[in-house]
Length: 152
Image (tube, rainbow, N blue to C red; front, side):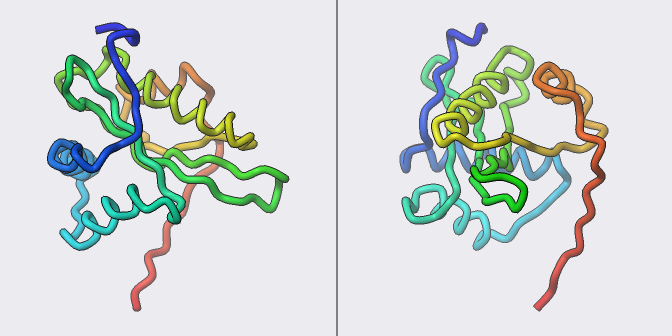
């Protein structure tokens, strides 16, 4: 498969079943679980034009094979928003064949259209296969991320 055999388009309501399979694969890959309510909320937010969460899918031979979710956020360091590529996942049987790159390129294009000052994303340090792709765009940041979960 070449990048030219992959089509990137906005996620559609009819993609839900396949999106859910990919979403669950993504969560499994990151050894995470979410409640069905959070998954449904994410799905609804992806389709809410008033919510700042956008979804793209990669389609190969009529099948949705990958997803990307991204958002824009203001920065205290720049005039223009930054674009955060929050979720990126490609079906395992097609990884390495260009769908991930096509999704990233589409997010970069969306960020450029909005004149974002930066596109950024995170991954596990051990995600070596994806990091080969990511390193082809830019070196890894020297920053370390800390997460403090909040409970209410």
